[in-house]
Amino acid sequence: MAEETLPPQLPDVPDDGIGGRMAENIMHFGRVLRRAGLPIGPGQVLEAIRAVSAVGFGSRGDFYWTLHSVLVNRRDQREVFDQAFHIFWRNPDILEKMMQLMLPDIGSSQDIPDAEEISRRVSEALSPGQNDSGEVQEQEEIEFDATLTWSAGETLATKDFEKMSSDEIKEALAAIKRMRLPILQVPTRRYRPHPTGSRVDMRRTLRAALRSGGGYIPLMKRERRYRHPPLVIVCDISGSMERYSRMLLHFMHAVTNDRDRVFTFLFGTRLTNITRYLRYKDVDAALEKVGEAVEDWSGGTRIGACIHDFNQNWSRRVLTQGAVMLLISDGLDRDEATGLHDEMDRLHKSCRRLIWLNPLLRYEGFEPKSVGIRAMLPHVDEFRTIHNLDSLRDLTRILSEPAPRQGESVMLPKDTAA
Image (cartoon, rainbow, N blue to C red; front, side, top):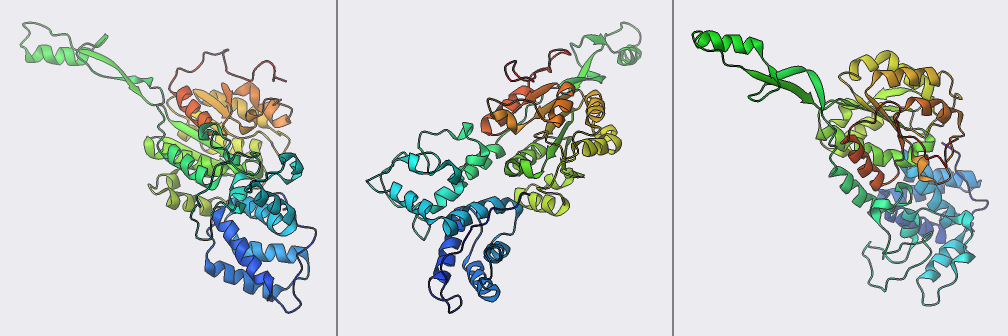
């Protein structure tokens, strides 16, 4: 994970320890974090005040990490905390401008520099549209610059997971929970009895002839048995993919509990099989188990080494009977694609269909300039984006359709290809 940007200076602090306005400001900061979705209660706020009083104000880093150690207990909370801290303690002018937006005299959005862009969860938490009890106050809806607030005309389905507010994340998770994955059935080598089948079942026909005494021979038919192919999901959880990991884990949990023969793996610097943890019906219990099992969250990415581990130890176990594989990654490899070309070639030959889902495709000007992306692209059947609810719904549609024929792989558009 990249090192958080720390404020250049601290607010004025009274000489008599933690007294004065500092304790009150820490309390208000805790309320901002709670509105942004972090589970902050009165106990944690009091603990933060005690911690700051014990550590003191020797440096800006001490103050930041003291509050961080008390108020942050999960990896997905770091970015929200960092943005809220950056605005609340470093640049009070941004907060003042946001407060002025709710007044009748609204200033121009051009006064706000692009460098101060913040996430929707933090801007919503800092907005005065909620009182201290969390109840929404009645007020006239006004459309502002989307960087600092929300517009009623925005569509949840097309919004990037990264830019969703806490309430929108809850709605998106509820929509993901209701999703179903209608994977197209594929024929197997086995048959089953059927009265109007296309083939004659000789064994059952002879047995029926013996039972009839030989007077006539009834033709018994059979048809080919169809079955959903196994689904294998391999997802990147490195630092560059952290913002999407939470939503995609909920999607994997919904898919695992919706059908059988779903196998899920996470990788960053190492490969971890989390299939059995996602089979818990309670999503919170499942994600808690996943968090305990995975040790390389938000770190680097060694795609070639992890794919090699999968090919060596898992491909023959899970890539059977025409399995469909979803590879979720941005293709940014720390090892500069060492061995990635050969491993992807072997992986592609081991499954019926290999679909690469890359959130970087959400950018219109995307070009495969990374060494890892160029090494992976020739060995995938389809290359698509995954960054919002529409892309997830599009994935369910793709998997319910026949796979493209060899030589008709769905790749990048011509205007964005390398």
